View 1 (tube, rainbow, N blue to C red):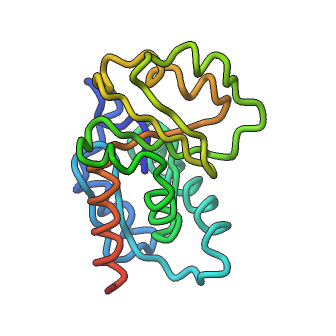
View 2 (tube, rainbow, N blue to C red; view 1 turned 60 degrees about the horizontal axis):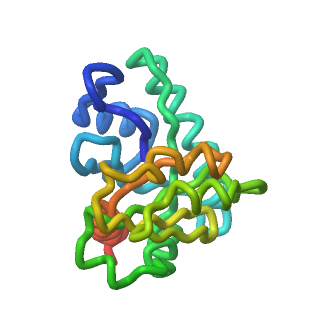
Length: 182
């Protein structure tokens, strides 16, 4: 997941070019979903080294984008198992019926000093949130674009994050399963 690409006029990154770039560094079966930096691919990392490999690969991809496209995005690489575990741990399953109102923020690390009071203060009465294992879940019944918490969550958590709505999560899981041959 590349954060902040193709938003507005800056940080443009055509997905066809990104697929070619990722294949050039040895990733296989590269596929993208919409224009906002969602990529699924296979790599030869073994299961026991997948998480360590994911962090190193994220840095490598960010550096490659910087070299070839002139900006360095934040990149979070998740294994298919990590993505599936995050989805299965969703504390708001009833919100899945409105997939644009349920967001998962994938965190660079588990927050050591999240500002829970500020999170509660920023949330509207209808909003719900939950901090899981390196995932912050946010349900915004009145709309994500109207949520003060949505725009401030990363700062209040104190760690780098990238958010995806439920529809995107479901589609990425489908793509990851297809790539794995499940």
